Image (cartoon, rainbow, N blue to C red; front, top):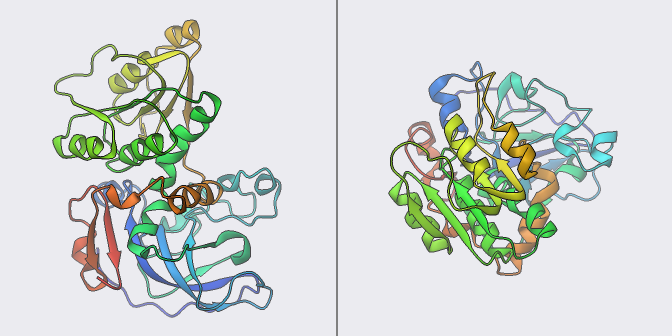
Length: 332
């Protein structure tokens, strides 16, 4: 990780904007991206960004210069068939190997990263989400991917089954499971359980309102079942355990990325119990407004998730430091 001097971006897109990042959070995926070389570099990192609009194209009417905004990490146009169905993460206009996205280099379409002096943003009126007043950029930026990811694991299932219990298993994505706990509590689940191999994350989950359990050794066949489960182990045995811990006709979301081409599943068990397994990236533009509404209503406080804030000048070294959640801030 190192700073690199590049030419300033030119605002050539009449529907675009230039955003000066104020705070950028490190996604749970960013550290293995750097450590394992998942995508070829060099490229600008950071896809959880809050910034200030410094320039707008002549066709931009909703966004204004000087406005603080959240930048959804998936790039979408707001006008194609997929966007019309609110499937913004599948935008047909901005396609790329991993989908159009900031902070993934050529694999994300080459849209730049948040840890930069200026970030060009297309389709500004659609894509940029106004930042609510009174909340620091260092808090808001964590929502753009990981906060939204935790929320979407429980929001739909709890809307379909109000009052359901929630079980979160594992901490492979170190912050996403905790955001899932926070969202489940905020959305009224009467009991949220959190099982992980890390003491600090279990303690954080307990502070968020979960019944936390420290797990050691191999994953068992199952835990006490819940109607809504979140698999976050990144291990085949952990995935199978979580699926078997999902109640009859329950809903399991996997937020851990299983990189193997062949991952075994207990399909017969899922069939006989009627279990739904959902895997996807979080749709940032779709769910950000919902998460912001929970925060504005005082029901969700993302600041309770353990977060380490480092200064912009220290980003070169700080980006690779261990942390449940790490934020690079201009004001730190």
